[in-house]
Image 1 (cartoon, one colour):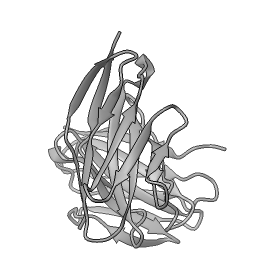
Image 2 (image 1 turned 120 degrees about the vertical axis):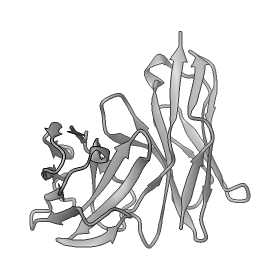
Image 3 (image 1 turned 45 degrees about the vertical axis):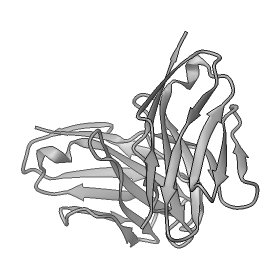
Image 4 (image 1 turned 30 degrees about the vertical axis):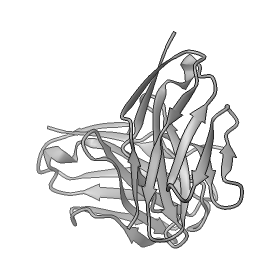
Length: 114
Length: 113
C-alpha cells in the first residue's frame, strides 16, 4: 500500500519570500508523484507530476518539485510567492497498475502575508 | 472544451435518506473516479469506472455505490445517509485508465442533517 505524509498542515509566508512544502511518501513499488492545488470552493488542479526521467519537474507558474528516491520525498518549492498562490496544496501518489487510484496527503494550507 | 461537470453543486439531505450525485467527464474521457473530501479524513478514493465497469474500489461501506453509462457519465449513490457522510464529493476524469492526468470537477457539497 502507498501512503503520503505532508509534514506541515499550514505554512505562512510573506509575499515574495521563498517557500517549501514538504512531502514524503511510502510505497513498496514504483510510484507516480503529483502536486495538486485547491483554491477555495474549487476542485483540484494538477500543478505538476513526476513519472520518470529528470527528477526535477516544473510547473508553468514557477513551482518546482524534486523527486528524491533515497529520501522518499517530493518537496514543492517556489523561489518567490504571490498573494495569488494562497491555496491548499496536496501531494499525491499513484502506481502504474492503479494510475487512477490517487492517494492524497492531508494537505498544506499556504497563506501569503502582504 | 468543457471541463468536468458535477451536479448539483450543493445538496442538503436528512439522515436515512439516499442521494445521487452526477458527473459528466470531459468529452472523450472514459475513466471517471470519485473522491470524498472531509476535514477529518482528507481526500479519500471511493471508486473508479472505465467502460461502464468498476475497476478499482476504495475502503468505503457498501452504502456507497456508483455506475457509469455508455457515454462515460457517472453517478454515485449513497444510501441510508449518516451525518458523517457530509463532505465534498469530487469527480475526476481522464482519457483512459492509465493516463496520469486527472481533471477534477468543482465537487458536490453534501450536507446531512
